[in-house]
Length: 335
Image (tube, rainbow, N blue to C red; front, side, top):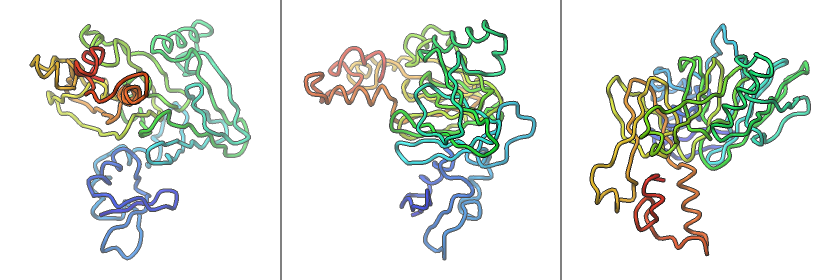
């Protein structure tokens, strides 16, 4: 069994597989101190032979811990993710740096941080005057988000900090868009914050089946640029690297993000009895490589459904989600 240190507090015991999963999601970095039986003292994960292979594969944890690539147009950010089940991310702003976030997501900031509310996302792609700002704001409105975002900048000559909290239990994942080819498609409510210069747009699902039954509708968020972006998912996160033609079947609500090269479709479960009484809904998502897919174990819609079923006077509970016994609405949605 393994332990790792977070905020000078031991976390564990956990298995090697669990530790590897936390390395992949960026919770454990090469500099994180770890300990297991046979060690004389705590040591950095990168110096531990059993863990060295995980960092040698180019996992997201390595990308987050490595120096930022040269030539980045978005602002470079230094950060730390704090917590286990209900996390927040603290971002360090050097003089002149800025980060953009959803309105209402800020947890705290130091005295020197300047906060400005703007139309759209404030990215470089919107330097077209008032029309560019209105177009950016309109894109956000289509995804169900606010017309406004908030820019947190550091106009001082000293280091400043700002933190953003996750809206519900889950994990915050740092995504380096430059290492992902400059683009990421994610569920419309997963964006938390990003370096200023990252554009927050929309991604239409062209197939009508995906739009009607895919869990996220016709529109998902498209994050483009070459900077760091922070997304949030419910529960735990697992990443899959799909080879060309490799297929994965996923509950529609559990699909959190994917690279643009991944094809996304929905498929009927195949058997009427399974669809009506199996508790998994009529449809599931089918993702086909090449590319990377991120899955979440606890979609917000699923958690909200459980809460409603348990609330006295609202629902009677005790029904399997997605089945006829649990309500016809969940039958189609799968959540």
